[in-house]
Image (cartoon, rainbow, N blue to C red; front, side, top):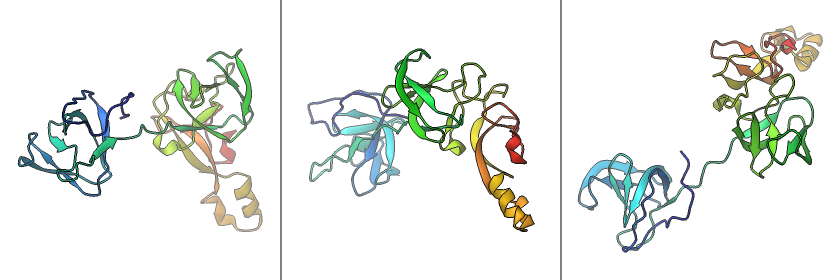
Length: 233
């Protein structure tokens, strides 16, 4: 859950009340902090927030009210130093060019609005999917799918934890799956096999990013079904 935008004091003074629902705060003290059932240091709730841990809540004067209705002191009772600060927003996901060719950036989500820059095959860029486009962190756009064939051009750089969204699945593949890494018998595996180490075909070492559909089938970015032998391309 990302922190709300805007400037919110990490530890408001006693005359300030900040109301911002769903804000993520981080325990920046070096100690665990005990939750209270009420904004009273004596009303311990039997729950703690560990040092460095984040929690969602609303800052109310000198107390942080958590989303489950408990309270945490916002300042150290002796030194007055802030115990919680706004957690930085999560970094946007990274995407890899899996098209096998350069992809041109656009200044807008429009194929005709070329920005005069390209991303090379295999290179990674950070951004957020918006429909069929990837909006990069520098405000430019990359098409997520081929405009003619519909083949996926970009795949999550860390596919094991990123589900597909915004139409990034390969053409013909059912939606709702995720990108992942799959091993297959490719050129490196075959080269080792040729040097008489035949067991290598049992555990091939070539790997590529593929789309795993909800039914377990795997697809290449082109839309062709993935095959353990030569990848199915």
